[in-house]
Amino acid sequence: MTETDNKPRLLVLVGPTAVGKTELSLKLAVDFDCEIISGDSMQVYRGMDIGTAKATLEERAIVPHHMIDIHDPDHPFSVAEFQERTRALVEEIGGRGKLPFIVGGTGLYIESVCYGYEFSEGGSDEPYRRELNDYADKRGEEALHDLLKEADPESAGRIHPNDRRRTIRALEVLRLTGIPLSEHLARQKKESPYELCIVGLTMDREILYKRIEQRIDLMIEQGLVREVESLLARGYTTDLVSMQGLGYKEIAGYVTGETDLAFAVDLLKRNTRRFAKRQLSWFRHMKDIRWVDVTEANFYENLQTIRDIIAGKFPSDPEYTW
Image (cartoon, rainbow, N blue to C red; front, side, top):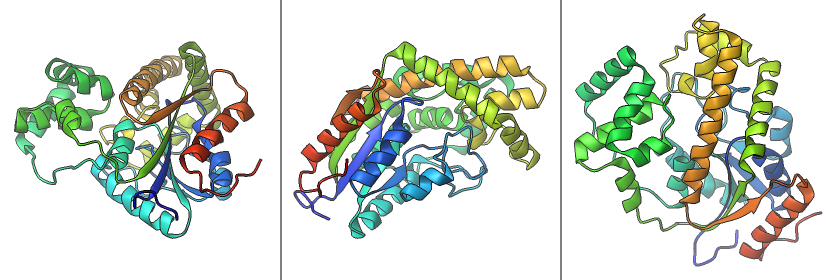
């Protein structure tokens, strides 16, 4: 693999949910001889396929995919583990003469790899964690998230209200260090160990929201309710990190009889729209992103624009196919 300034190359495609990353990434991966690394914190879980919008087995047969189906749903996957595994994959893929290609929408996870964030192995306050868990059990995730919103509004804006584990961790970091998690992230050096090419996809907000709603309707048709029923039947409870993910917590409310299906679907659509807004906000603060507006649904024009960006950044790559 050719290197610039002794740095290995890394291609990255980011954007909000439902913007069209998967279809474009498959074409780009073929054109530039890539292997894809999923940059989605939920796709690591086995048996959670529909709600996480994983690439299909047929799509994964087109080009190698990594960081998919590596854990059972009771594993507490973390950004530090993602970073460690992905760093190793980038080295392995590059060693095979291929271009490593991260595709996804989990901003902190992707940024931690791109800029070599340092994570402390120590630093925990188990009694405080139990206290916060008890608080959430009694008052709900929204109330717990409100505590973070008061203490560290920037982190609260980036963490989903249903994501109890990350909300508690952000509060724990503040308690242990006296410094908000957002400030810790801001202090990271943000110098990449890689020769980066980062492409970000964006589109008109209202069109994106319609795509989100259409995707959720399709997930219901594809069997999202059955998928959640199966997970619950296997003993995976709603307090797990995995089951706090979009689609699983909302539909679990219907499966357990807390809500009706129409309410659960409407809640999922609302939460996903809000999540997409937070994703865009996160990526807008990342440096080095070349943005491509894909509002106009001309797939091949958008593809050509991105091809040109990549070829301009990595000019020694072989001529891509058309």
